[in-house]
Image 1: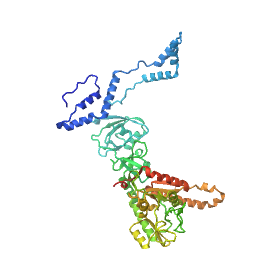
Image 2: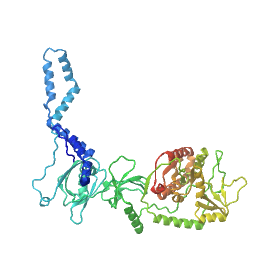
Image 3: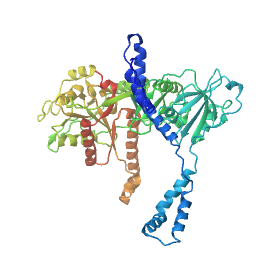
Length: 586
């Protein structure tokens, strides 16, 4: 400390005194840590604000602010009656007019109501005689204000002592905001009701039914856990979750429901079984419980082993979007522009179908769809454009949609030119309609996994290669490709950063179709069958590949669908998107 400490006058405020003390601190080699600690403490803005508030309260207390009288309204009535009994001058008439106004009467009535009330805080009385167990324990009385929201804390019974203790504090909840309740605190009473011999479920019910002010009698934990700072981990949900259907959750009211593809901010992973999270984009400050990744994976593995995993069983795998099976070649001109494209109406060989089916089943069995860690990403001017992948259910006609978008701006959009082993026709050009290769070269490329998808039609092989997509992206164009849903997982890499758009047709109701003409009534069975196949195809993709999809586009007609896709593509360059963390790591 400095020797010349200034003398403080009687009128010096506490915050001024604090500032003077801080200024007198000087580094000392022997007490460096202590001096630094004091500087940090005295320099806290919150401490300075508390000192100022304390001074204002003391000043308010010294003034003894009590109302002069508690009946201003009756007094005003008496004055008004007295004035009306005599001869009035101009000032008296003005006073009568003022006292007669309804606004002033209302103000005076409010004054009387407030003046007659006692606003001093009333604390719950402590019992005169404490139990023997309380005599040597520090008891804390906590009063929390709870509206319709949950209290934001869960409880459990200690298996060794039998005491009811606070198991977790939900971030942002009423208990967390108060700062008065901590993990490990022992709960003794709720609103005067003892909880020593009640089950945790009964106590939770009391807390849920309580509204407004809740008084808790607790014994503070000897050591409080250090939870540290809130984590900033963001997860994309790969499954739907409804806590009201989860029998394992400690408190269903504290659970956080979410849908597949929603992004969650995980604020606490202290509990290895139940994380605390918020839905991104919502203003709710209170976090909710969600199953942790490890716990959810264990549950899925167990349900698979005992055969109780809920799943939509479809005996026949629905078809995806197809064009025409008459001929694999076609004139790909659209509005005067040639658009390269691959008809996926080819049939895979029997051997390839069996292998692909077996690999798909093994992959789905090994994959646990729980959460995917994501981060915000925005396309930078010097980066390559993101790959845009279209997948479609039966009836979506995504190739037609792709062609229209590219034809309207061929300088900005492009698509991968497919490979084929069939002979080149006279009017065709290498690298425009197709890349023409020998069958041997094609099969070598298959072995080296060069194709994202391929197949055989009329003894000729057709396929779309990764290199063909890279060629479009190297020209700084947005590459639009339409592939089978099975191929999407192979494209989800940091190189392509694909944006997956699922296109499905708008399925009209049977009644609307039948009402067009009575003649169509006899076609209802055919219409029903087609609509059912389209609905099953869309449901199958959503169920099996929905976790990979970024956007769902419902196609009512070509023009409106093209407008929706244009809007999506325009946002890709300027908006932020959630992508897997692995895509942005160097």
